[in-house]
Image (cartoon, rainbow, N blue to C red; front, top):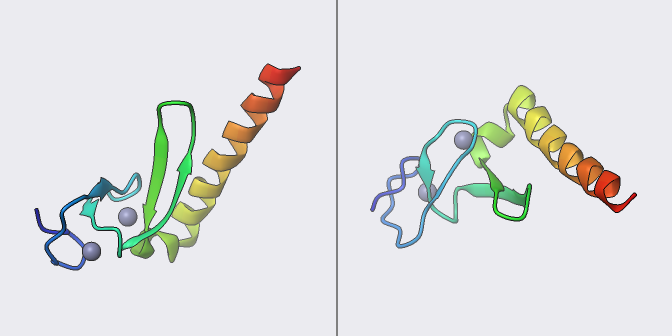
Length: 72
Ligand SMILES: [Zn+2]
Ligand SMILES: [Zn+2]
């Protein structure tokens, strides 16, 4: 399996939620659990894109909001 961002061979890959490329751990900028089963991944390229980064941060916010709603 080759990383679609840097081309290096990688054993374990994740898919970036914003460009849908299979990326290695080195190219992964950040990951966040959204729900119990879902995780959001963002690569370094998408992180430098302000629109995508905002979207990623908003995803995190929604997740924490719904968690607090569930608690109440
Ligand atoms: Zn890579
Ligand atoms: Zn990406």
